[in-house]
Length: 250
Image (tube, rainbow, N blue to C red; front, side, top):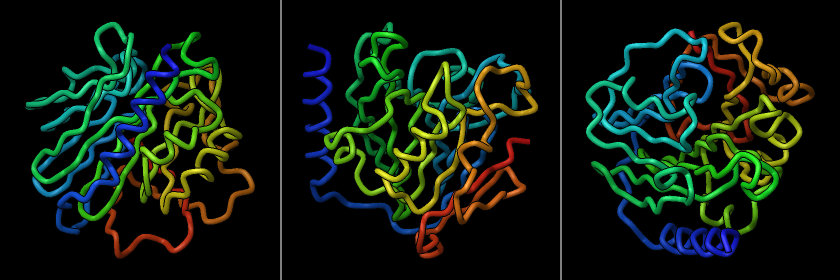
């Protein structure tokens, strides 16, 4: 029954995404990385925090935002109280994580919607559900995969996600998310212009059981180590072929 609901929800989202809608004027957006899966996206005057963590080893930053997105209800992704000034919290799962929330909202010209997915490779029976968030703003479509655990995306989910310019994807692997091999395959399915690895071992969490980012990067062309925690993205400056951008969380 859950798989049927999941498929129907993905189809409904895909239909709504392909419907003609007014889009925000093209302008650069800023992406700030705080480590793990925590980002702050700034577009115009709107600040969108994604998956703020709790006490997991990273120093807790001072962050101000307008909207908080939570892909799933684990403590390394749902510390909404860390984000000061937030007037909206959009949670990808319903209370208790029992089902996917239906999210399709436009806030100050920015479209935000959630796409259902699984936290594991067993249709959610091992680690539960996960929501993928897609943000359309400044002429860009940006996707955050949360704690994706399934090794491939179905055609329905790919249609619901749509064209992606910037993809934030977990790469650290077992026992929490997809690892290097699965992330490589899913990035090839989505075919974004920029790939930003996340959710991997760093100096802030040296004993974390997953891997660092290097297995995902191995053998891949067009890898850029940014050397900074902030990336400015403009549609007319996107690379012609997929580029991997490794951001610094410090």
